Image 1 (tube, rainbow, N blue to C red):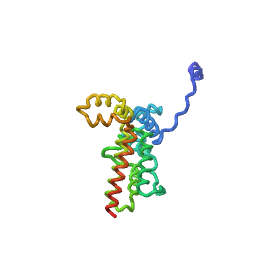
Image 2 (image 1 turned 90 degrees about the vertical axis):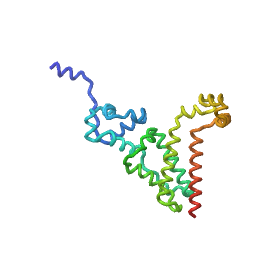
Image 3 (image 1 turned 180 degrees about the horizontal axis):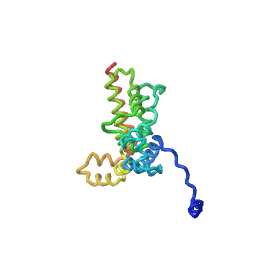
Image 4 (image 1 turned 120 degrees about the vertical axis):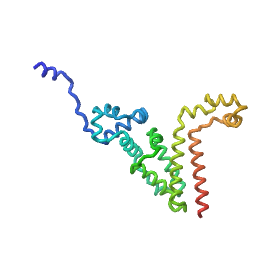
Length: 224
């Protein structure tokens, strides 16, 4: 009877949601978005969901499999660029804009999508969208794939320029001050940093993309 009354005095526990692959992946993405991909572990995901670590292995074989599903879920559906007016260049500009948005929402994606691995269907669909944007330009299939990979690389590189890194190179940043103080060693950098304060993150992205697309335009014109 004492146990019964003790039980009555305890707050009622909310029933746990049933464990599923989608619930595991959603929790893992939330951890990665908040604390970085390094914070994602089977133990951490299980704890956040209120389950034991072993419970996760009934749904996901290992962390590598979990990461693959995380990536394919986080990238979302690939963009349909067929209705974008303005030809191949406008379509690729829209592709880069949407890719940048996705990678900004999930800042762990650029680092997680490198190296030898198997892509999921959604991630592969993003490459398909970029390659399809160049259909009819006269570029070969290999060249169109290479162009897509160049665009991915450009967004990845510019995305990796953190706010701290950009501020260091800005007009009032510590790195800029040190370089200007040693103009004899860094004459060109010092001169470049003595002009208007650069917004390296945005300018590098826009400038680099323009250079890439200009190069593609020249190659396409050669094919014609």
